[in-house]
Image (cartoon, rainbow, N blue to C red; front, side, top):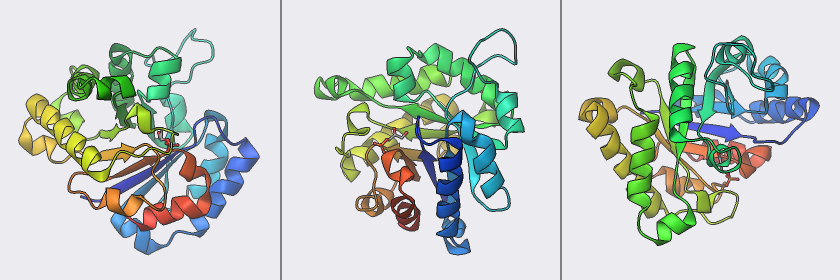
Length: 251
Ligand code: 13P
């Protein structure tokens, strides 16, 4: 399976800054990289149009960081899937731990968003991962299994192949503390088992599971060489063109 690297810019970069950053990223990538790796940029909503204007003739794809689960209506401050598609998005990150932690998103809400994203023809990048407390108390495998099961409730076998999962241990996000390649790979295997329980082995084997949490150009190669890590969801390092390009080159 081809790997995928996505840059989650989070709440960083104005419209103009995003334009410049995406131009620098594009300039550093060649056909060679795209043969082995899909590349997705997920800027803030306000930068979707400017980033799209830069990448639209390239192999780089556009993603958003969130969406609402309704078609349209009185939901002040929200953005719909249709709006994202019209802005050039192919992907949307859903259930990021920062959305869970700071905006109280539950697995049930994330499940509604995933279903809507699929029906809008967006590819959801679904984030799961345990907190430090959950890891230390030994319940982390159960926690992640439950997140996968609840988030994917009522998703059909036909639709499931269109999704991506990102395993992002909360204790590794923005902390500089990466999961070891073995820790990450073993959780990816657990997630694949959870997917196999829900959808069968064959379908589960086709789903790309990304790792996220303090990935940089130094640790990417080892992480991506693990048997069940099919790329990464990159935060901080995706804001530095050189680092992000090197991460892609290391897939
Ligand atoms: P960092 O790469 O900054 O740790 O962030 C990871 C992340 O949350 C990507 O979604």
